[in-house]
Figure 1 (cartoon, rainbow, N blue to C red):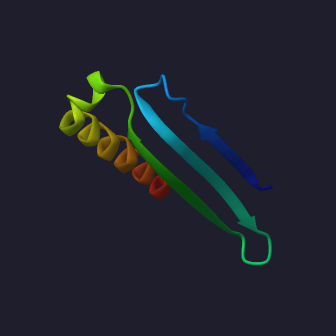
Figure 2: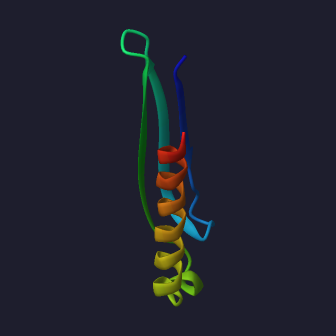
Figure 3: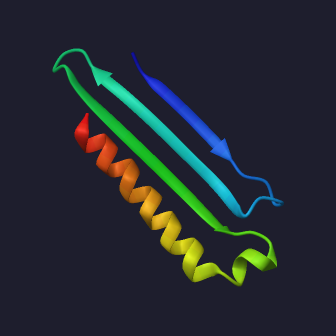
Length: 72
């Protein structure tokens, strides 16, 4: 069974961009592959003021995604 999800963010959101998640199962090898692709930019001016904090939060979330994938 394969799974895909694409999420987009609107201009009024704190972060503007898209995220793509895919999980694939290869029945021949019984291996599972995961793919995460994301890009974003800071949205409104008030978020850009806190850009260093927002970027650190994005890195933390990305690290958690990757850690969760390694555990499964």
